[in-house]
Structure formats: C-alpha cells, structure tokens
Image (cartoon, rainbow, N blue to C red; front, side, top):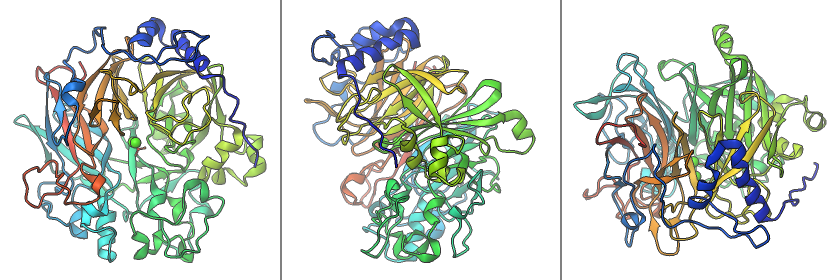
Length: 613
Ligand code: FEO
Ligand code: CA
Ligand code: CA
C-alpha cells in the first residue's frame, strides 16, 4: 500500500496566520474582530506563534442578547449535580432512559426486563431531530432520538451481562426511539401514535446501494441483517426522513479466544476482539471467532434511514455513503437539486467525507429510488494553500482500481481507501453544520495522539480541539473547496470563552452556531461541566447558554420550526464511575435507590423569543 507523506507542513504560525487571513475570503469583514476577541492570534509572523485568548467579550452581537452563564457561576469546587442556564431562559427535563415510549407502555423499573426495555426509551441519548406535526408544528411532532451507548453497570448493575436475557436488555437499550411529543398546558410530554416504535440491535434492517447484494454482507449462518448500533449523530432529509449514524460499533464485537488476530481489513476498524459490552459471550453474532458470522461486523458502520412517520418501514442502511465510524450525516441540497451529505469519521487520523447523489433528488424520490442509494463518495484533502480537493472513492479513481476489486469493497473499507488516495488525517471529525452562506463547519474534537501537524490540524498534540470551515464550489457539489481554521478551542487561559472538545454543532438560519462539548472543560483555575455555547459566526462573539451536570456530555440538538423551543440531551450523567451507586443520580437527586438516567432538556427563552437570541 502506498505511503502517504504527512510530514510536509508549514510552521504553526504560518498555518494559523494563513488560516485566519482566509476568513476575509470566506466570511467577509468580521475576521479582525474574531481574531482578537475569540480565537487565536499571531502577534508577529517572525516570532514564535502566540495564542491570545481574550478575558472579556466586548462585542455586542445583535443576534445574542441573552445574559450568559459566566465561568465564575459555572466553575465547580465540588460536583455540580444540576444544570445551569442563562437567567433569560428556562428548561424542563423530559424523556429519561427507561420511561415508556408511549403513555400505555411499561413504566420504568430497575433493572429493566428485555421485554420492557424494547418498549421503553433507550439509554445514551445523542443525536435527534424533531419532525413537526403539520397541524400543530411548534407544539407537537415526532422525535427520533439516538441511543448511543450505555454502561452495563448503570443498565444492569454489573460489569457485563451474565446471560442472554441480560444481553438483550443491553441490546434493547441501544438504537433509536421514535416518539411523539406534545406541549400540553406549557409542558412537553410523550403522547401516543401509530408511528411510535423502538429500533434496536435486533430489529430487522435492509441494505441499499453497491454493497447491498455483495458477499461482504453475507454470513454462512444465513442470518438476516438486524439492528443498528452506537447511534451517534444524525441527519434529516428534505423528504422528511431521519438518518442515524453508527459510530463506535467495533467495541461491541468480542471474542472469547486469546488467539484472535484481526485481518488487514479489520485492523483499521479497531476490531481487536476486546469488547466493552460482553454480548459475544451469549450472542454469536458479536463473536469475532464465530465461523458462521464472519461478515457480521461488515453489517455495521453505516448511515441508516428511518421513516419517523411509518412504524412498518424497514430501516435502510445506505452503503453508498461508506462504512466507518460515522458521527453524523448533514444534508444539503446542491446544484441541480442533487443531495449532498457531509460526514465525519470520528477517530484520530480519520477523515471527512462527502456523498453526492447521482441525480435530482425530487425525481429520484418520485421514481422510487432513494437519493442515498446512487451517487459518488468523496474524501477531503485540505491543502496547505487553503484550497481543498474532494477525492473520489471508487474504481473510477485509477489508484483505487488497482487496489480494490470493486466499488463495494471500497465502500466497505473506506478507511483503507482514504489513506491510499492521500486524504488529510483529521483530529476526530465530529458534527458538521451549514450556515446560509454555504459555509460548512466541522468540529474536530481533540486528538491527543497527534504527533505531526498538518495545515487543517495545526496542533500536536491537540488537547482541546478546533473547528474547521470550508466552502465547496458549485453549490456543495464541486470537487474543489477553500477552507480555514475557524477557531481553536479557547481552553488555554482564563477566559469567559472557556471551552474544550467541541462536538455537537448546529447552525440556525441567522448564522448562530450552537456548539456542544464533550470533554474536560477546564483551564488552570476553573473546571466547568460540559456545555452549550452560542456563537455569532458574523461577529465571532460567543456566549454560554447552558451547562450540564457532573460527568455528563451535552449532545443532540433539535428545534421546533419557530426556533422558540430547543431540545438537547444530557448523556451519561454519572457514568464515569461505571456504577449505579456513585452518588451521582441525576435527575433523581433524592431517590434512595436512584441511578443516573440520560434525559432530554427542553430550552426556551422566558420571553418567548428565538433560542440563542
Ligand atoms: Fe458519538 Fe464522536 O461522538
Ligand atoms: Ca459526538
Ligand atoms: Ca465526542
């Protein structure tokens, strides 16, 4: 396999200076203000680079009038067990793990039975989207909600499942919930409906696209494809469906044999035989040594389409979008109404991808062809001169035609193909958001393992992460783009902008960027919980809207069409001790036998304004 030279990078000060000067090209006139008050600055090109993080935010954004939560308020000297929110906002907590997905369903009891958990909200709340009811769009709708993962200690009170029933509880706690929610007398609550369902690890699924009928997806056991796993971030389509993305699925595949040696195709996917979840002890689908299930792991790592309005629809895994550690799938409508999907592969040194449909999505949908089943997959190369190239991953690319037998093989192993074509290794690409200016923003959460910087990932190691921005030619569909480093996380000096490990990301139509964090939020003096920040992409001003509870991650974001109600998630409160008896029992702080429960937070301005304003 060809060696890729990743050592040719300019000095850091040149990278940062150049990246920031690109803002003039990409975003107009705001670059100077942004440079001095938010991100990083280079004091002198001839000196060693010098990060300057402001201590005060002086700009006043017309987009953000709310009083921010200050670092002083949010800083913790002991465990902070309840969220903080701006004085101008209120919140309520809904949809805790284990509540029934419809009012008539089984009530929460710990530990859950496999039967009950299959009709209850899963654990590990992550990406989600709100699909408004046409008759009552701002007060009622379907919510599709990912359940990324759950500690077996929290779910069952033990390190790993001890029998198949306990495996099933864990499996049924994963996947996706499709619920209906409605605001009744000022409070959001679960209501029933024909579309309500749980999709979990044992739900039948089907495949579309070039790999669908390929041997790579067949097992000698003849078992039909089932289930979705480690559903992280998401996307939604113009034809009103939900996309759920499979991220850290390799960690569910284990082996009881110490002799297991991963294949060259399994190694880049971290299929090491070490599982955190112990399912393989009782369910041979997840045993990497099972000769009847040699291709089971190829059935995971995809983007999965769900119809939130039709409980009978079989979820579809779209192989044309490639198999990797999918964070999210952010959809844009491109030139000639082709569908464009931006996707990050969240592992250190992995890549950013783009899919472009073969034709006009309206016509494809009318013809009964999924726009996600036919098209081209590209991987990004960020050049040192702030240009970029989308490199096609198919046998049309002559360098790949020599290495791979067919497109199905490339799409099943794009981590291998990407390195072969010289894509840029990134610092864990997480969520991707698009502003109305067609600027595409991607969180690079951190990468402590980086030893060699490149232009788009200028810190080695990258402890606190950054955000990269690009703009594609030809209304998202072109193979050329220009880019800059939008900001580095400001966690290195005491600052009101303190944040680290940006992860969840969403942009509204006014140009507000909502940033959610997943990592240690601390500088030398302050430690705060993971948070939701709002940033004005025009002025660069940033304000802290919300902080979560000890141990949790803030993730997932959905809004009502009027943007006056926002939903975010508190994921894994109390997981760090991997025990239900740590004293961290959010949201039931007073319960004698309470355990931590992931839940959804509803945010709204007290005066009824748009969230973020
Ligand atoms: Fe599931 Fe990369 O976060
Ligand atoms: Ca994430
Ligand atoms: Ca993360």
